[in-house]
Length: 405
Ligand code: ASP
Image (cartoon, protein in one colour):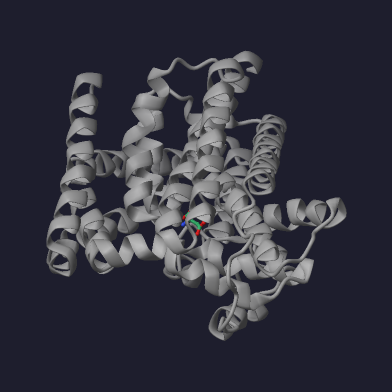
């Protein structure tokens, strides 16, 4: 897709967002009748994720060749993930301490979210490491459990690269498989304006009347302001990293907007992954960077989620009038980072891993009740931030690859 084409498409996608907002606002619940358009788009994207991810990671690894270079790229990637996620959490904590959104919020009548607690108790923090290896790869693919698939693909990529000549046919097969997948993605992208329209109209339609929506938001209004302003600041920090560390022009952001808006509409980093890779490819990001960094980032690098979890935990503490000192806030930094790494790239996954943060700091789990009504809304913004963080990560690694090899 040439750049004029992609700009047109971006404009149509933005028209889709506004048309969706208008239809959702104007028709209310009746707008859910166009939700199937969004579902169709979401399903089509999700259908591409597994084959695209496996072939991208394998070819990403085989194109790096030397395992030592892979080690360097992994170190830069993981370093980037960790630094940016900690910056995000610190921004979240700063905002929540500044705005104090929880002060004066009533916690009466809140109930313990047993269904969510059960999910977390079945999958505790230690399981995050265990979950890296799946006993059954097909089952991992069927449940979109990406981490084991990525680990397997990296290992397999290393194996066929180590085979030398004998491994070449397999490498070539995945290379051409990946090209085919990317062509499919570029076709699906043309459907994005209508898909985004359907998703947004459906989501606002499902939220009920505009008054009910505004009422829910204003009940925890300052919490929404805290999270949105924190995410806004982090988005700008990422732009600065893009400009000064990755040395990409602003047009990189414009190019990535198709993926960022899709992330907003789908609330899923995983479903957006095909578009993120496609936009990065069109921006000229080195294949070694985009094929490796983006799939991994879509499941472990979640700046928006980490910021949200830290801010929400403090919000709950304030609502219950519990003072958290610096030590406990430091624990929040660590647990929010881990919880964001452990969250899957699917809608509202952050709300579930939020329980881990509350449990570790010893905050009342009932507090989750304060977040439920607006979580689906804030999820959109944190997912968009997550995808932007991945895109900047690919640009940083691209610069590193360009300079070093
Ligand atoms: N929906 C987010 C994502 O896919 C995860 C979350 O914060 O709930 O990136």
